[in-house]
Length: 306
Image 1 (spheres, rainbow, N blue to C red):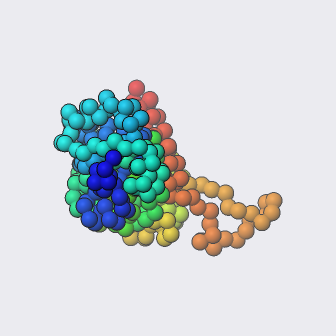
Image 2: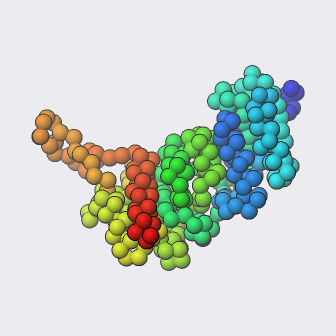
Image 3: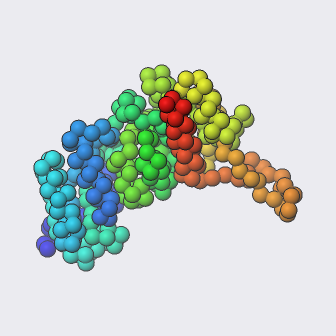
């Protein structure tokens, strides 16, 4: 394999790809396959945000053979893209790492840098009944896990607000297991307009997920919103360090806090805790719990409606 054919896969650091070419990297056979499936589904008319493209794909002969039918469909449905076949060692030499497991693709963002085509209204009209609205969630590990959770529980979308990490970074894509290509999502620059759209135009009730005065268990918050006729729910998740600010909490319809047991010094002896020492969950773990509660509430509502 000539060095020229592999050159586009060298120096594929996120910052270089994002800033230089408006691209992103997809790695591993499973995630590359999900990327292709999502692109084909969109080309066939499925509602999936944001709009992305395929620039090129690099495969070992083994994986090219395994994906032959999928690649054939991609060639029929998608704009022309480059495809290169190389040995595992050649791919490692070009990319500089072995996490690719024999499959790498370069995707094209719908705009330069982080920009993506996808709006709050497109998300609101996508039919999802649950949204994770993220404020200042920086770590790409968490971003990837949020997408994986949303994809696993289903019927959920994601809004990435100010200060959030890049959902199309290589690690976020990998940790999401490719769900970033399947879950409807968008980015917003400020909350007031986004909240107005979610509540006013699309009927979402907003639940701030924070240990704050007036907080109740997630299932009680969901029940309270449903009692007010709000059948769609957006859970507002805060940053890893500071959580949600008071101003954003005040814009929500309810506040939810997952009940947890405080640490103890000994059997039955509570330890006095400062706020910063209270028990807490990683944002991705917390999102899985509230998504589960929302799914259960929706199932109960369907059963009650007959």
